[in-house]
Amino acid sequence: MNRTALSATDFSADARQAAERAALLCAAGAMAGSTLLHVMQASWLDSVRRLVKLPAEAEAAMLAEATAKLGHWASEIGARTGFVPQTGVRIGSVVDTLLREAEEHELLALGARGRHPLRDFALGTTAEHLLRRTRKPLLVVRRPAASGYRRVLVALDFSPHSRTALEWAVRLGPLAEVHALHVFEMPFEGMMHYSGVDTALVEQYRREAHAEATGEMRRFIADLAIDKRRLHTEIAGGEHIPSALQERALALDADLVVVGKHGKSIAEQLLLGSVTLHLLAQCPCDVLVAQ
Image 1 (cartoon, one colour):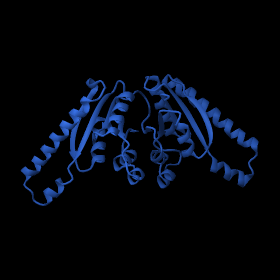
Image 2: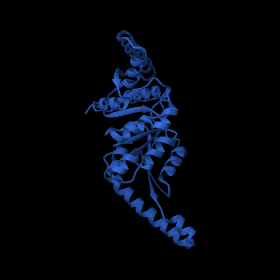
Image 3: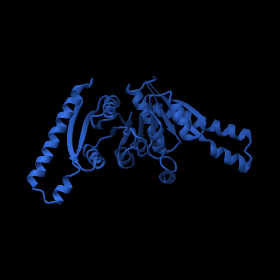
Image 4: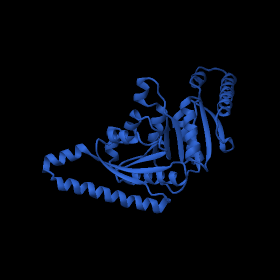
């Protein structure tokens, strides 16, 4: 498989950040190459043709303009990051085209919001549509790409998904502190307090859950072929995992959070998992959904 990234752009500021992040990853050696792709929505072109009888020359001119603009972006990105991405323009459905083009790449990078954030909110973001259908890791970029990642937080549940997530965290942050966090759920803690269960018993429940999670973390990390000197492991308890992850990301000032794509059943695939959706919507930094 090509160790390359595909960065989708609609010429928005967020898309520019995603393109620059992909280029920085290439400059750091985490990726071998990057392609900057703009998709002209086929349905929009069809509407224009129907309403104003768009001549072929005008359509060709729009394609040429988009190609030239992409080339200008690539030059500027190269000057900022030290790596010049390749470029391409396609006509078609944005999501379908990105899915097809992504098959030739290892990683897909998107801006957190496009040119029409209100429309994205109403219809579901491009990132969410892609996540439901792609088999590729998806990097959603929210922060300006000023430098390499410094602090990476990766969520672990000790599944094969989280093993992949940790491997990507180490790879995309080659010089970063990598914090591996497992949040163990305590679904009955609130009920125990509410029911008047003795506080000492509740604390014992928490200690035993923490000890069990600590043992699982130790066994999980021992089997991984990574440089463990860069790895900081953390165990936390909570009733709402997405909130715990977000709070830890803020406390660390993490610039990347990595999660594995969850979901084995059709229903779970449609929902994507509450952790992933919550982070995509609320996390203040970049989010990589690994798979």
